[in-house]
Amino acid sequence: MSQRLTIALDAMGGDLGPDMVIAGADIARERHPDVTFLLFGDSQRIEPLLNQRPALKAVAEIRHTPDAVAGDAKPAVALRAGRQSSMRLAIDAVANGQAACVVSAGNTGALMAMAKFVLKTLPGIDRPAIASFFPTQRGESIMLDLGANAECQPENLVQFAVMGAVFARAVLGLPEPTIGVLNIGSEDMKGNEVVRAAAATLREMPLPGRFHGFVEGNDIGLGTVDVVVTDGFTGNVALKTAEGTAKLFAEFLRRTFESSLLARIGYLLARGAFKRFKQRIDPRRYNGAMFLGLRGVCVKSHGGTDAIGFANAVAVAINLAAHGFNERIKEEMSRVADAHPLPDTKAAAG
Image (cartoon, rainbow, N blue to C red; front, top):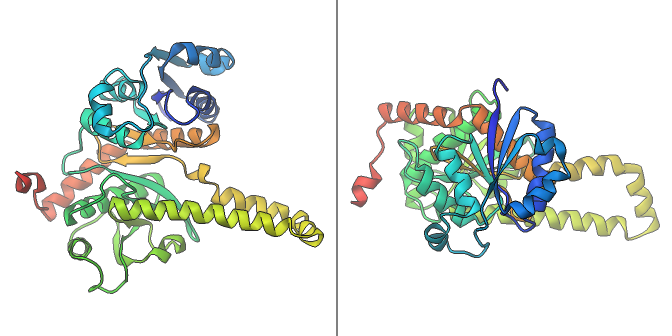
C-alpha cells in the first residue's frame, strides 16, 4: 500500500460491541500495518480495551459519542434520531474525507439508510446494492443484491451487473468475469419480466465482463459464473440458505465422527483435511458485505461475528479503498451509458 489509509470503525456495532470491534481492529492492524483507525463510540468502554493493546492504540484515535444505533431500530427512526450515533459519525468521517472507508457490524437497514443519505449514490447508479463473496467449487464468486432492494426494475439489475463485474476485476483480479442473472431456469423464456428484460439488455450492451445468461440456484455453489445478479429479496434468501446449509453440514459431520470409536479414529486420520474443509466454509472468511454504488466505501460486518470475522470485513474495506473501486465504477457506468443509455428511473418516477 503506497500510503496510509484511515479506517472509520463503528465501535458500538454488533452483538459484542467494542470488545469484538477493538480485538478485530488489532488483528487487522497486524495484517495491514499501513492503516490507522478512527474509533467512534463510548470512550469509557473503548479506552480500557485500547490500553490492553499498545500497538493498536498507537495508530488509533477515539472519537467519543455515547449514542449508538439499536439493533432493532427501524431505518427511518435511526436516520432521524441517530445523527450523533457512532454509526452516523463514522459514515460522516468518510463523507468529509477524514477516512477512506467505514466498517460497521451494526443494524444493516440503518447502516444502508445512513450511508445512502450521507454518501449519496454514484453517477449512473439509482440504488446501492449489498454484495458479498460466496465459496464455490471453482474458488469464489460475488453475489448481489443481498438485501438492500427487495424489489428491483430491470435497470437496477443491469447496474448491479456492472458493479459486480467491476468488483470482480478489481478485487478478484479477473480480467473478464462472467455474469449471470439468477432465475428459475436457464432458458431465455423462463422467469418474470424483470429478469428477462435485464438479461435482454445485458446481452446487447458493452460490459466489464462477459454475460453468461441465466443461472439457477445450484449454479451459485458450482461457480458457473463469477458474478451472480439478483434482487435483494431473492439474494438474501439464498445467502441465509447457504449459511444454514453450511452449519447443518458441519453439524452432520460432527455427529458422524462422534458416533463410534471407528468414526473417531477415522477423524483422527483425516483431521488435517477436515480442518482445511472447515476453514474453507467458515463464514468468518467471507465476512464483510460491500455496499456498492455509494460515493464512499462502506462495509457491513455480520453482527454476530467474532474478532477474526471483523478483521476480515476491515480487509474488504481496505481492498476496496486501495483499488480506487468507486472511481472504476464511475468510469464503467459512464462508458456503458455512452454506448447503451439506460432508462432514467428517477425521471420516470417523477
